[in-house]
Image (cartoon, rainbow, N blue to C red; front, side, top):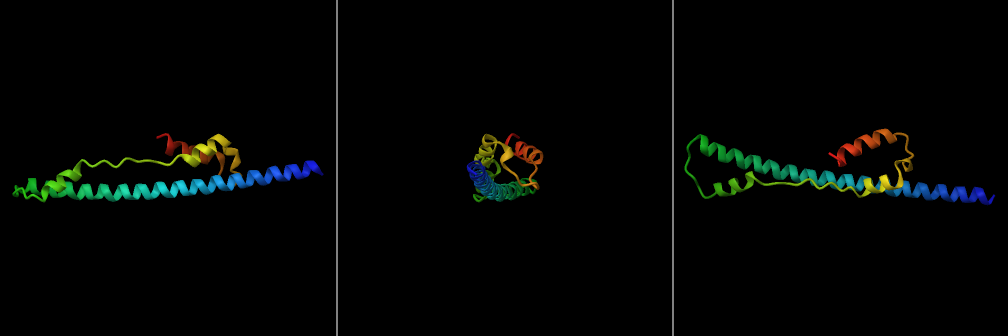
Length: 118
């Protein structure tokens, strides 16, 4: 009886840990998506600025002061800062903790390794 209670308690702890890690993973991925969307928006602005500069050069147009802004956007860098907290925790705890069949350990490993070690 005591062994059954202990096993049940261990299983509950593992399930709570699994849910916490997966929830953190979802949160990290949503944050990464938001960051990538912001980076995309910034890069689209840089492309628009580069096109404006290009149009001025191609058409031999005069150099207005407003073109300085567009020149400054051309070289803007947007670093990709992926949040690896949940991924690192899963690696530390062992991917075995994810019991969900739809999240096969092999698929999970390949996908997240390719994202965080690219």
